[in-house]
Amino acid sequence: MNDTSRSRHALSVLVENNPGVLARVSVLFARRNFNIDHLVVGPTEDSKVSRMTIVVNVSAEQLHKVTSQLDKLVEVIHIEELADADGIRGRLWAINDNGPRPVGAMAAAAF
Image 1 (spheres, helix red, strand yellow):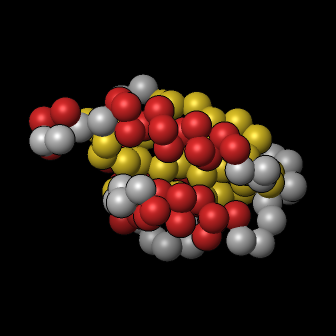
Image 2 (image 1 turned 180 degrees about the vertical axis):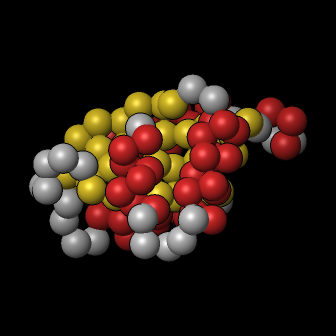
Protein backbone atom coordinates (compact mmCIF):
# COMPACT_ATOMS: atom_id res chain seq x y z
CA MET A 1 0.00 0.00 0.00
CA ASN A 2 1.41 3.42 -0.84
CA ASP A 3 1.13 6.59 1.20
CA THR A 4 -1.16 8.29 -1.35
CA SER A 5 -4.06 6.12 -0.18
CA ARG A 6 -3.60 7.38 3.36
CA SER A 7 -5.18 10.50 4.77
CA ARG A 8 -5.40 12.19 8.12
CA HIS A 9 -8.34 11.19 10.30
CA ALA A 10 -9.38 12.57 13.67
CA LEU A 11 -11.34 10.45 16.13
CA SER A 12 -13.17 11.58 19.22
CA VAL A 13 -13.37 8.62 21.58
CA LEU A 14 -15.31 8.69 24.84
CA VAL A 15 -13.90 6.20 27.34
CA GLU A 16 -14.45 5.20 30.93
CA ASN A 17 -12.02 7.08 33.15
CA ASN A 18 -10.19 3.97 34.41
CA PRO A 19 -6.48 3.25 34.89
CA GLY A 20 -4.92 1.55 31.86
CA VAL A 21 -7.43 2.68 29.23
CA LEU A 22 -4.90 4.93 27.48
CA ALA A 23 -2.39 2.07 27.40
CA ARG A 24 -4.93 -0.35 25.90
CA VAL A 25 -5.91 2.16 23.21
CA SER A 26 -2.32 2.99 22.27
CA VAL A 27 -1.36 -0.71 22.16
CA LEU A 28 -4.27 -1.34 19.80
CA PHE A 29 -2.80 1.19 17.34
CA ALA A 30 0.76 -0.09 17.84
CA ARG A 31 -0.23 -3.71 17.14
CA ARG A 32 -1.46 -2.60 13.73
CA ASN A 33 1.72 -0.59 13.15
CA PHE A 34 -0.21 2.71 13.04
CA ASN A 35 1.46 5.82 14.35
CA ILE A 36 -0.67 8.23 16.37
CA ASP A 37 0.15 11.72 15.07
CA HIS A 38 -1.57 13.53 17.94
CA LEU A 39 -3.29 12.36 21.07
CA VAL A 40 -5.08 14.54 23.59
CA VAL A 41 -6.88 13.10 26.59
CA GLY A 42 -8.99 15.16 28.90
CA PRO A 43 -11.91 15.06 31.30
CA THR A 44 -15.53 15.59 30.34
CA GLU A 45 -18.31 17.07 32.43
CA ASP A 46 -18.80 13.53 33.85
CA SER A 47 -15.81 12.60 36.05
CA LYS A 48 -16.31 8.93 35.12
CA VAL A 49 -15.75 9.65 31.40
CA SER A 50 -12.72 11.00 29.50
CA ARG A 51 -12.41 12.10 25.88
CA MET A 52 -9.53 11.03 23.68
CA THR A 53 -8.93 12.99 20.50
CA ILE A 54 -6.72 10.88 18.26
CA VAL A 55 -5.26 11.99 14.91
CA VAL A 56 -3.89 9.23 12.67
CA ASN A 57 -2.71 9.02 9.06
CA VAL A 58 -4.23 5.82 7.66
CA SER A 59 -6.31 4.57 4.74
CA ALA A 60 -10.09 4.40 5.01
CA GLU A 61 -9.88 0.60 5.25
CA GLN A 62 -7.33 0.79 8.06
CA LEU A 63 -9.46 3.37 9.87
CA HIS A 64 -12.48 1.06 9.67
CA LYS A 65 -10.45 -1.83 11.11
CA VAL A 66 -9.01 0.17 13.97
CA THR A 67 -12.35 1.76 14.91
CA SER A 68 -13.96 -1.69 14.88
CA GLN A 69 -11.27 -2.92 17.26
CA LEU A 70 -11.61 0.18 19.46
CA ASP A 71 -15.35 -0.42 19.66
CA LYS A 72 -14.67 -3.88 21.11
CA LEU A 73 -12.78 -2.47 24.09
CA VAL A 74 -15.05 -2.61 27.13
CA GLU A 75 -14.10 0.91 28.29
CA VAL A 76 -14.93 2.59 24.97
CA ILE A 77 -18.32 4.31 25.17
CA HIS A 78 -18.53 6.13 21.82
CA ILE A 79 -16.36 6.75 18.74
CA GLU A 80 -16.91 9.57 16.28
CA GLU A 81 -14.80 10.60 13.30
CA LEU A 82 -14.38 14.37 13.30
CA ALA A 83 -14.43 16.39 10.08
CA ASP A 84 -11.34 18.33 8.97
CA ALA A 85 -8.59 16.33 10.68
CA ASP A 86 -5.90 18.77 9.50
CA GLY A 87 -7.74 21.70 11.06
CA ILE A 88 -8.22 19.79 14.29
CA ARG A 89 -4.54 18.85 14.31
CA GLY A 90 -3.64 22.53 13.97
CA ARG A 91 -5.91 23.50 16.87
CA LEU A 92 -4.47 20.74 19.06
CA TRP A 93 -0.97 21.91 18.18
CA ALA A 94 -1.89 25.49 19.12
CA ILE A 95 -3.35 24.32 22.42
CA ASN A 96 -0.18 22.38 23.14
CA ASP A 97 1.94 25.49 22.41
CA ASN A 98 0.11 27.34 25.19
CA GLY A 99 1.60 25.04 27.80
CA PRO A 100 1.34 21.49 29.02
CA ARG A 101 -1.17 21.93 31.85
CA PRO A 102 -4.38 23.06 30.07
CA VAL A 103 -4.19 20.68 27.09
CA GLY A 104 -6.74 18.09 28.24
CA ALA A 105 -9.35 20.49 29.58
CA MET A 106 -9.06 22.90 26.65
CA ALA A 107 -9.15 20.07 24.11
CA ALA A 108 -12.22 18.54 25.74
CA ALA A 109 -13.98 21.90 25.68
CA ALA A 110 -13.08 22.44 22.01
CA PHE A 111 -14.87 19.30 20.84
